[in-house]
Length: 119
Image (cartoon, rainbow, N blue to C red):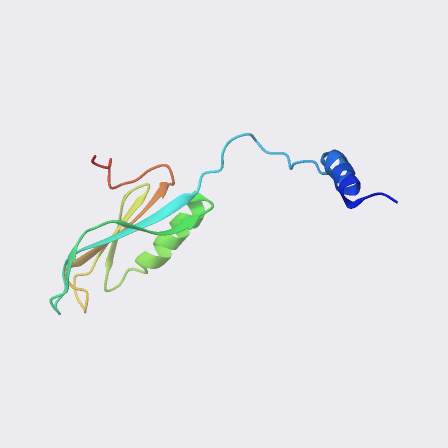
């Protein structure tokens, strides 16, 4: 009868022959981060300083873009403006959020739109 250690050693030795890693392109996967901020003063006196913060992470740029567009909402009481490929601006000219501007940005996880950190 074989000991447990002998069986474990044999399994560890032969397991790599049966389990092959999935083929990959060799390129590292890039996650996309949805950043949000709000600035301005609402009619109720709530003030927003425009501080950016990461909201959520997506596997693809398209996933992040869809989320940003959904958060920005349909046009109507708000004005949606796409500033560039990665940035959506939502202006609230009326309603409870009048005077507040929301900003939604999608960037690769290697980019921090807040800029470099100070030492």
